[in-house]
Image 1 (cartoon, one colour):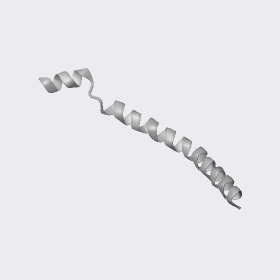
Image 2 (cartoon, helix red, strand yellow):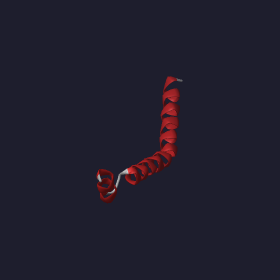
Image 3 (cartoon, one colour):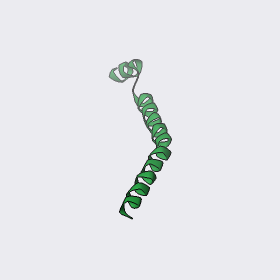
Image 4 (tube, rainbow, N blue to C red):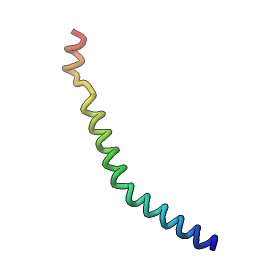
Length: 50
């Protein structure tokens, strides 16, 4: 019974990881995209220094 429980646990864990992978990848992509958009351009920085 212990072996079956461990096997099923590992199967469930693997399935959850596979299902979450695309969601996590998209989240990382969106965070990077937002980070790039927040960076001030050189012209904006120079204008702020004015």
